[in-house]
Picture 1 (cartoon, rainbow, N blue to C red):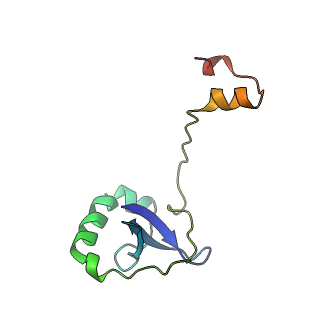
Picture 2: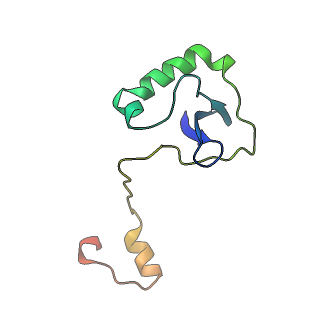
Length: 99
């Protein structure tokens, strides 16, 4: 299960991507935001999907997908290939990145 948000910009609804299909879960979850994650929303969502999977509306193909999380409090990026990328672009490699 992957979290998605779909719909017009600024009016996205929560959904899930399961086995190649996008489903609308907005009847159960208002949004993927801080409240959702602080309240163990993933566990609740998994249970709701298990109980209601055959009744979940399918999001039509071609529907716009937005950011999967509304207003994230943090964005963490990990540059696993930083040194290799720097070498490829002839950029200097910081000493803490050399390995």
